[in-house]
Length: 220
Image 1 (tube, rainbow, N blue to C red):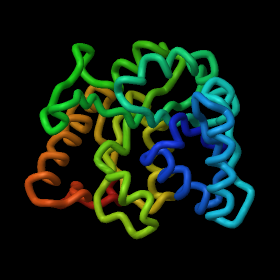
Image 2 (cartoon, rainbow, N blue to C red):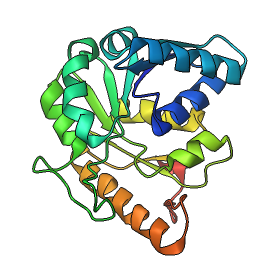
Image 3 (cartoon, rainbow, N blue to C red):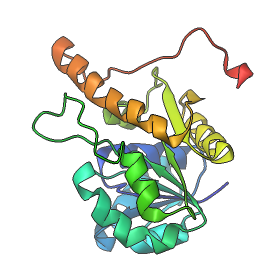
Image 4 (tube, rainbow, N blue to C red):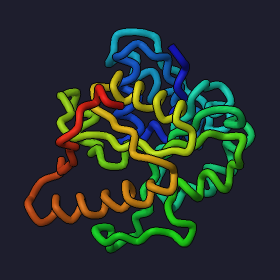
């Protein structure tokens, strides 16, 4: 199994993914701007899963150490974090979970001029990195609950093999995932997050998600 570095794993989404992958047997490196905070989170994760699969490093070192890197930071921190990890992710798959939410109107779709957060990441890191966009439609609360996740993951990226690897990781974490086309399509998957936030607010939930019907995964 590959070693997965999660940049921003001290947050709710990154922490939930880290926990699920550790439970699936993956070695996980927790990345944070503060190496001490990352190590503390890793020790807490090891205690939860009853093993020694997690370690903590600062963002730059975590990006260098991981075979697959996951970016799980807020949109306002995206560019600064990309600067920290750019050299360490060259030649690797980077999974971008970023959603371009612009407070205070986070329930309104507000895509960046580049088209999507995923496109920002690809343009900034260059063609030496295979950027795959995924996990935007999964509630952080659902990931951290440890319960079965009933909503699906849409995976976009220009490299089909890289998308397939991320689908494998999603399945290992207990989710059903789908090829959703090239990275340009991340504009649609990222926009869905604001739609789901609106639905959550309107109907008093925090776990709204999507499911794909009418097609079998066997055909993928």
